[in-house]
Image 1: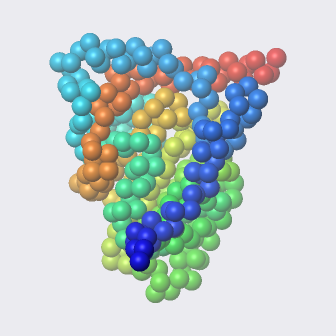
Image 2: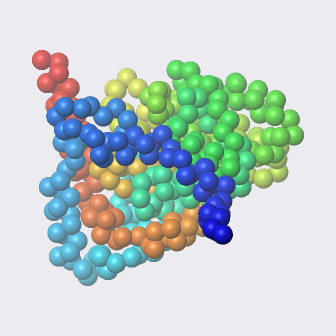
Image 3: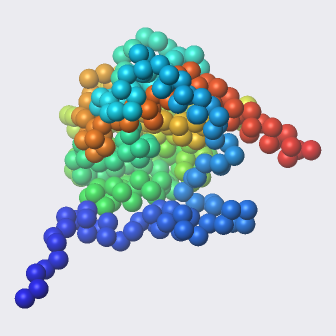
Length: 323
């Protein structure tokens, strides 16, 4: 008698069917023809904009100075490279990202994701109890697909030209009645994927206020995660400069997930001090630690040059197109 197949968890069973993004990535890896096809899916970086020379120079710099970049080819701590964390802090303060000043940033902690911003999002699904996740509609399908596989229920709220409609959000929360106790967290991509809509500062403030009111109503903090993956790509001079959700947060419920993968490399989460430490430990467990070289090479003063390089290339492309 043949034994039955290996028992899978609910997540494992659902994952036996490849997700849409996995199917697209597999097709790209196997079938894409350089110079012929155009890739409109997943968000692959344009190979021509990757600052290869700077990355090589950074790697060489790291390997030449082991006294500064200790154990660069080995694993590091659960929060990630301290060199990279210092560079991100400097990046935030020098460019006044989100209007954050040194005092506010000192009250927060930064942890580094091992493999893309999605690794941080994956950590959230393991730390927070399955329940309702509020997000904007159209949804960021890659992460929402993962959430549904993990047992969460996605509650999308339509957006308009300013982002998620906070008036409809209040209505939907009210319509939930006692079921609002099932709300696990709120997830907002601040420059919407797929629409490109920029979340206005007015809406961002209202979102924090709504979630703060919900937290008071439920008697527990409901975290709100702002995924600002595309904010560094806003080049429209007429666009409102995005403000950080931290500026409106009095309860300690705001978390910001950032990435420089669109302009250089590196993923990180800024969050209230003392909170979500397990997220960092979770990332260490799933990756056996952090590959220091992969992080440190990005940390040694090349972040600024890399961002400027890509923006310069983008600006020169715009000038060429206008001729």
